[in-house]
Image (cartoon, rainbow, N blue to C red):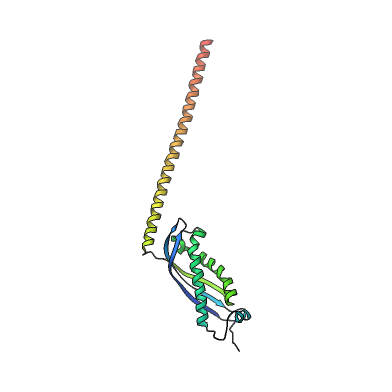
Length: 195
């Protein structure tokens, strides 16, 4: 006889230690990121749960550890690919916690049902942390600053080029009007000499 609580929620905290995440602008250059959070699950279909889990040697601690391993694996995979797949600069990923949480929850919901027989109620990332003390982070910020400076130089060059072309265009139009005036003046003088 098994007593299964269908009313209770179980919460498991998880942490993914630093792993490399690439920026969409520099896909070959990675920055270390760590993720922390929690999941909340409950049991809604006890028949499916019993079918998927051997209850003879069942313990909530072992079950939670299995779930945590899956959560860490999926979280790491999705966060590592998130900047490139969703065009999120890696330095802004900390600000996109809700968006990243939703992406992970969408993938994990079916895994929890199909593999464990439980309902994933909540998936909450409490922090996405960039290792700002790492050498890769320093190199990355230097690269992005250089890229921004180069973009500013290009923007300035393009502005100057457009201004110059605009001035030349106006000069050409003024020159064309002057040429037309000279032609008309010459024509008027010629007609005056004829008459």
